[in-house]
Image (cartoon, rainbow, N blue to C red; front, side, top):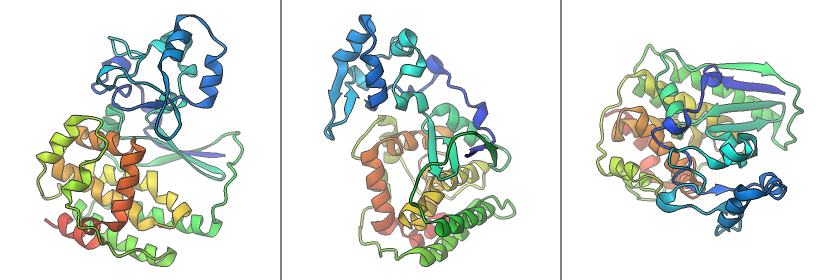
Length: 319
C-alpha cells in the first residue's frame, strides 16, 4: 500500500498536559470493541474505574460517561490520562490513539493527515511558509477492499492536482484563487452528477451556530463575527490546501465534489469573519469535524443553504 502524508506529518507530537485545549474534554469517546475486549482481561482499580463509567449513547454506542465540565473520566488534574498511565497508550480507545489524525483509504493508497482540531497541528499548518506538499512511501499493508469506481477516482486524482495548483498560485491574491477554485468545482460537478439548487434561507453566521456546542469560545467568536476582506496570507492557502487534501477525493463515494471545494472556500472565510489566527480554525474544527451531528448538518447546508451557494461565496470572497 502507498501511504501519502503531508511532509510535516512526522513532525507532529502531542504535548499532553501542556496543551491549551485538551482533546480529552468536550466530547464523548466511543469505547471500541477491541479495547472493550482487552479491558475484560485486566483487573485492579483501573478495571473498576473503566466499568464504572461505561455507558450507552442515543445511538446505542458504548461510550465513556463524561465527568464534570465534560472532562473525560480518566483525565487527571494535570491533564494527563490515567488510563494511559495505568495500562499504556496502546490500550486506550482507538479514537484516543488516533487523534488528531485522520485516514482516507482508496484501495492501494492510504492518505493520512492531522486535523486543525488539535492546537499543535493547527499551529503547524497555520504557520507553513511553503506551499503544503506531500510525500509517498510504500509499506507492506494490503490494499483496502472497496467498491469505488476506478475511472472516477483517477479523474478526481487528476482534478485535485489542478485544485492544488489553483490554491497555491501565489501570483494572485488568495481570494481570487478561491473564486477560480469555485469555478473549477462547478465544472467538475457537471461531469459527475446533478447538484441541487439551494433553498434554505439560513443566515451565513447561523451556519456556524452548531446545535452541539463543545467549546463556548467558538460561539463567542461567531457572535462577534463580521464580514471582512480575505487577507492575502499564506495561512489561508494552507487552510484551503488542508480541506482539498482531506475531503476532495472522498467525492469518489458520493460524486459531490463541489461541496468539498466549497469547504475550502468556507474555511478561508471562517478566519476572515471570526478571527485571523490558528485558534479560530482550531475551534471550528473541534466543533464541526469532530461532532458527527454538527458535521452532518454542515454537509447538508453546503448543498442546501443559499448563503453557501457558489455565487454567494464568490461575493463574500470579493469583499
